[in-house]
Amino acid sequence: VQASECPLNTEELGRNVWAFLHTMAAYYPDEPSNDQQLDMTQFIDLLSKFYPCEKCAKNLRNRLNTKKPDTSSRKQLCQWLCLLHNEVNEMLGKPQFNCSHIDERWREGWEDGSCN
Ligand code: FAD
Image 1 (cartoon, rainbow, N blue to C red):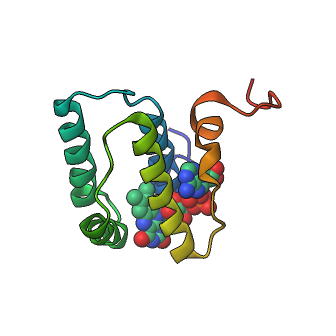
Image 2: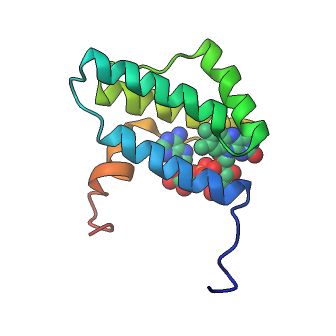
């Protein structure tokens, strides 16, 4: 095992989990069934219980109390998640992401071909 293979710190964990969450939202159905909508809501709820950064999990639980996930469609879920991530960005003093570019960033790649 390489010496550089170390446990994740809060930043590394965050980057990896955001990548997973935004990609999962990017491939969520356009027209989810009721079961799929409930399952996704529950998935996010459970994430807030088991996210292995206690302060982040607590923050997430607080946010979920006031901002319920919009699981009604792929587009809505992507936008909800983008806003959630922007709230965390704001709290941490990081730049806001332009949510109109969510699909380029997490599903299609940029028009200039830089992801090909
Ligand atoms: P990240 O914020 O990890 O973003 C990764 C990439 O996502 C960016 O490079 C950008 O391309 C893209 N991106 C940025 N904003 C958006 C957006 N709004 N929508 C779509 N894509 C975007 N850290 C704490 O210190 N305290 C916390 O309370 C905390 N809570 C967290 C809660 C959750 C649910 C998660 C997943 C992470 C949390 N983190 C928290 C970690 C924190 O959000 C960052 O992941 C970490 O600081 C690393 O930041 P980064 O600058 O590498 O970019």
